[in-house]
Amino acid sequence: MARIALFDLHGTLVDWQTAFSDAVAELCRTHNFDASIEQRLRTELAERANPNDFIRLRDTFGLAVTAAQLWQEYVELMAAGATCRPAVLKGLGQLRTAAWTIGIVTNGASDIQRAKLAATGLADLVDGVAVSGDLEICKPDRGALGSSRLPVRARPRQRRLDDRR
Image (cartoon, rainbow, N blue to C red; front, side, top):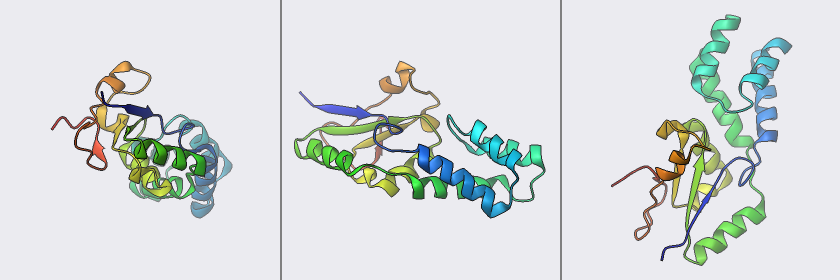
């Protein structure tokens, strides 16, 4: 029988809260956004962020910078600031050595989640990732787990868990 371990990304494998706080502060500093914009970002992005949040922000505050540019900067800042404790990386390595199939099921936009996985080194330790932005279903909905199909025999790197090939 195959041994499969599925993990959440935020708060389980990755500390994102410091990255979030730093990313919002740096974005505001870079673009000289005032306190009202910073507070809006902290409020609206606290649960999860996606490009539409930056469209609303741009429209609400009449910002000169494009929403696409703000989103890309935010993704890069979040990836750069996301951290994974060494013990987590070691533990996943031990699971891999013991022939476990490892997957991550996470909520959020695909590009930002995958950027965090790459930046923390987690991408090299997992067999697949299911991101709600790809699946259009979020945890804790059981469908997010039900749509996770890890390749158990062949273990290609970074195959999407919802890829049914």
